[in-house]
Length: 88
Length: 88
Length: 152
Length: 152
Image 1: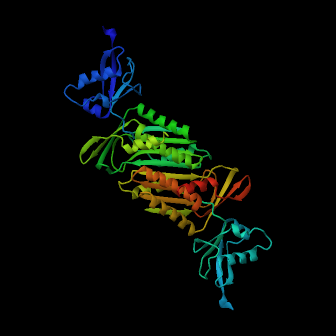
Image 2 (image 1 turned 90 degrees about the vertical axis):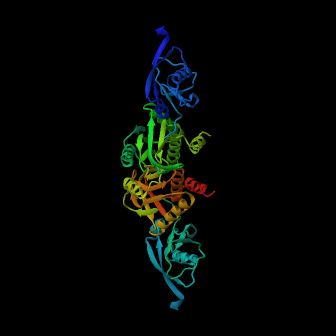
Image 3 (image 1 turned 30 degrees about the vertical axis):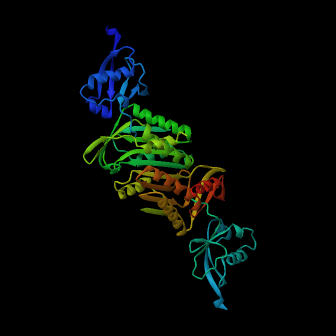
């Protein structure tokens, strides 16, 4: 069922990067996955032994544009997940 | 009757200085003269053959403070007469 | 004309102002510059270090969008925005905005607008070290309300 | 702290900014600078020269009074005002205002206030040479109304 999955690269920033201990990772998700599904996958992968990943507090950019969590992701999307920006 | 008169130094600025052709002058006026009397004296002295001195358009500073025309002038006052300032 | 840079290195108001002036013809009557400095004291304690993280690419785009908004709103001849990232100390320069216009009202309003939006819409995350404790900080309510005032 | 100078010589934003920064401790978070330049075009024609006359002593006092008003109204750490007089050309620098404060809102408001009041309350007279004709100019209505807005 390889053709039913895609591998995407995800970047993390700021406190989320610190909590996860990685700045980017590759994740395999089903095709037509949404941002929300990706966030749950990350929570499953990293969040098991910590309460640090509160999905509702996170923001997601796809191709450097902020998106809603129902956005469908594609294999060549640049995906970044981070806490709310705090400005300059 | 020398003691009844005072000699004061008057400075002129900007377009008034240009019209009069002098930047400062000494004028003798009666003691207890007001600014208004001084202005008329200047008009008599310089304005005979020109309409350039319109008293109502002038401003007067005594000791570097703007004053009204009823201000009485004293011998050691620093008096300056000029058109309205135009700012920096 | 506009120039947006995000960099670790310090900047020189003098060099940027000189470059800006060289680009301007005789139309410019007003140049307003803003330099932001790291303060020793925040609302919550003494700051010994400030760390700014950014998202290369997206951060620059977020600032360019602010610049475009300013250009649409006022008549401007030149805008320069330089924002530093990485480790900073109190008294360090953190942000520079230079705005040139024919008349001063445009440059003043646009410079304040750019700063207010940088504080809320530019993609940065800040971590303060105060009294030996490092904390990721959030936008202040004051910043958000200043930024919202421009939306009326 | 404040410094007011009226001079024929040009000034350097860099030197003044550097001196200002050296005076500031870690309290300053914001430094707003304004540089006014002589424009090539006025409302009435092409400007080839601008002549500024002042009243030595009274002019400085009039500017110092504006500075005091700004200090009374906002929380400011440092103010520098330098105004040139004498013969100027288009593109010449004519006025510099630098204001430092803890928070940017104070520095922005005070800098705009000082500029607006300089335009109406500072003791200067200006003569423009446009298209080979020299004319003593008057305060514009716009300047007067901008200055009056601060009096509410």
